[in-house]
Each structure stands twice: as C-alpha cells, then as structure tokens.
Image (cartoon, rainbow, N blue to C red; front, top):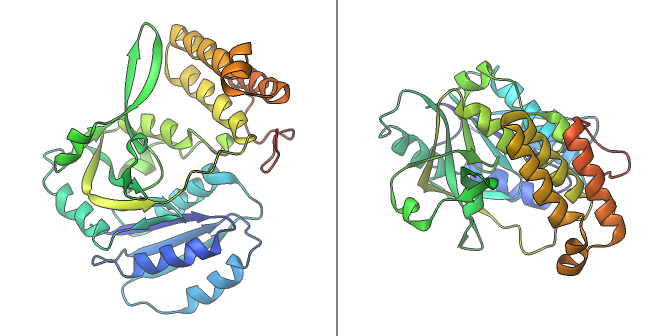
Length: 305
C-alpha cells in the first residue's frame, strides 16, 4: 500500500513542524508528503521552502502554495487533485494539528488486508482529543420521519479490528486514489464545514468506508469556542448538503430545526445569541436553500458576529 499524505495548513507553523516530524518517523513511511499552504503569513512558506530541500530517504516531498486562503475545502481539493497524479494507492488527508501515532500508517495497511471487501472507498483512523475519544469524526447517517442526523459510533465498535462508517472527517481520512479519480473533487464552494461529510456521501456511492481503531491520531483542538463567523458556513452548508443528497421532506425538517436552533427566539434564550448572529444564520439558511455558496463577503474569516 503506497500512501500520499496530504496536510493542509494555515498560520500554524508550530503545529505543522511537530506534525511533519511525526510523519517522517512513521514505522511505515508514506511515499509522498504533500503540504498545501493556504497562503500563510507566519513564516510557513519560508519554512516549507527549506523543508523541501532536506532529503529523507523513501519520501518525496511536495508543496502547494495557494495565492489566498481557500479554506479547508479548497486546500483538500488541491491536495486530492495532486494525489490523483502521484504513484500511490491511497491519499491520506489530515490537518496540520492532527498528530499521528508512530504506527498509524502501518496499522492502516495491516488491518486493511483483513477486510473482506473488494470495494473499499476509504479507510480512516480513530481520533482522540487529549486522550478523550472523539466519536463525531466517524459517524453513521440516521434518517427517520423527524429528519436526518449524523450519529457517532459507540465505544463498542472501537473494540473491533475495523467497522463501517457512513461519514468521516478529513482528519485521518485515507481515500482510495482509484475512487477519488472517479468522483468529483471536494466541494470547494463550502470553504469550511461539511465538505468532508458531503464528500463521504459520494465516496459511499462507490464503495465502503472502514474505520480502523488501532490506527490512531491525536487532534488536540482544546476547548475553544468556535468563532461566530463559522456558524454561517456550518448552517448554510448543512442545508445545501441535505438539499442535494436527500428528499424534500428531509430538507424541510433540516430547515425547521436549524431555524429553531439558530434563528428563533429560542436561540436567544437558550444560547444567548445576539440579534446580529441570528440574522447571519437566517441568511445562511436562505443561501443554503438557494445554493448561494462560496465565501460570503459579509462573513469572511475572522469576523466576530
């Protein structure tokens, strides 16, 4: 199994240095490491120029520098596009702050050989945050008369050598290059949020996704509250995903739930959301329904609502 690792980074040079060191010290080395720099301004470009020059036997290094911050969606799309042109079997996707254990790649390879399935679309690792299991990185899709939701797999599944999932995140996602070449690339118009979920749905149309619990990454994101501008993209992209992939009744349910959660007076009472924040989320719902995607000039990265 030949693997091309794709890391997307933006202004987190300290994290990136640690993460890159972990990949070059895997007990199974990747054939390629591709770093997509989303126009960082913290010295990342200069560091990567020097990093590229250092020879590491068995690993070919690639750096892609975007001319602007195109978000996680755009970064992973560039990485997958590059991976599809490389001599590899799988394209492994991760953030710059997701740290692999030493045997992460070797466990993916070892356990994948035990899977009695000729249609593997993707593999994925288990994710931990400060030694706490992060279940929502690997989900199944649940549908009923009340709507649709993603549900994390229980701990009992993680005692198995492998198990199927419907949805993965781009933290520890190992995509079959053969399948990646068949389907459309990541939906870059999302910018951030649900790009990986939407891509997972299309992966599942071509095969199955398996989580391998013995292959482990640590994604230490801490307990920081999500920046308020990100709620625009989270809201809009969820509505678009449901609209594109599911029935009209499920879309209606998704809109109602999102309205109650983020726009209605309940959002003010239960979540202490400001009027401006609720207006933003109302606009996000409308944009999701109409398919008005891309970066919204009113809600650019870093804007506090």
